Length: 551
Picture 1 (cartoon, rainbow, N blue to C red):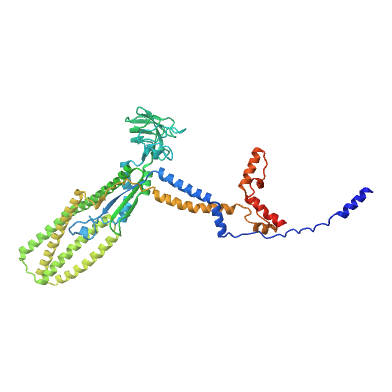
Picture 2: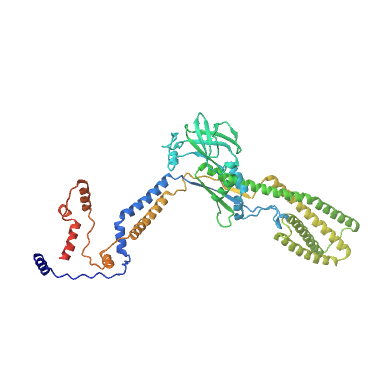
């Protein structure tokens, strides 16, 4: 009974059920378009990241500007002349033989050819690169400032040097299978002795400075001669050997050639290298090889033309003698014939035309031997020959209408004059070709030899640092915005209300002081409230807002 009564009393005192709050309806996903204020807050909140990015870019560029190997540039100037003999002849006026007419663009291709670069590579030995094995990154920078030999090795890396070590290679002939591979390692052993190692060698080669090293292996014969090896025992040097063809191709890629001004026929040849001495030697060797080739080519053409002229001179001499004898016999038989003014004009015109015809025919003969019948110059000569023959035929018809004695006299004197002029022209050309052949004179002049400036062209430190500053200033904000936009989270109370449908009464900020209290409690097992230790903290103030909203 008691239990039943107690239950009834409890039932009577039970408060009425509170009305249940309806569940929020599903709301569409909150999409907030970023605005200027949000970007401003991102940049301000992540200013350390932005400044760190700028500092990193500046540090990298500064280190590169300091430790990078200086690159120097040198150039030379070549003048290409259109040279021609002073006197006029059928070899120069009609065909251009004995004259080298070239454009700057064509000569640029000649300079960059293997015919020119090959001898320069051999002279300077560009296929061979011998240098100390410097410590990575800073080794060359330290070596440029060193005044004495360094102690080889750095931590576990043996053989690295940072001092004034030098190596001089007089000869380094190796089998072709070792070309274009990894570098040979030459190690100083003291007292002028050294060893040569390579990944393809089963056993190291041993030699002495100044003494030729010749050793036959299964891959071929090695011939090595070092004329200098300055370094303490254990110092290592690297010798890289490239094939001749690969060296020429690399040089072709590095050469910078252009014409100075439009149609100036002055060619500028420039090259960049980290070795100032090798840079000047390479450019000057290219210039010498090009000038020498030009002279040899011109001399060879002159010799060919001279041989042709020497073969033709006896023929023209016999023709001249025959015409002189025929004219002399005619005068002995008929005496001197007086010509009127019109006949004199005919005589001079026919003699000039016949001389021109012979010159054109000889020019065509020489051109067909070297260029063939389809060459444009040969076709031009054919048209000129046809025109001269037409004019000569018209004059001959006029001469044929004159009396027999006068006609024969005109014909004989015309032939004698034409043959005499032609023979004299052949002699003059033979003399000119002989002078060209023996004088060794080309149509290329070296205006300026290569001289290397003491100031490097790369790296341009000021420009590099300015560029790094711009890159850092652009990359820093971009990285900050990217990180802020890719990290998912709630950024505002409005976003909470929109996503959940719940009312937001307040926002509690992050407290650095609360983090310290939490860390202190974790270490010392002590408990202290933030409201007691720091009542004025932003978190304590923010807690009052939802309390006020709920009351």
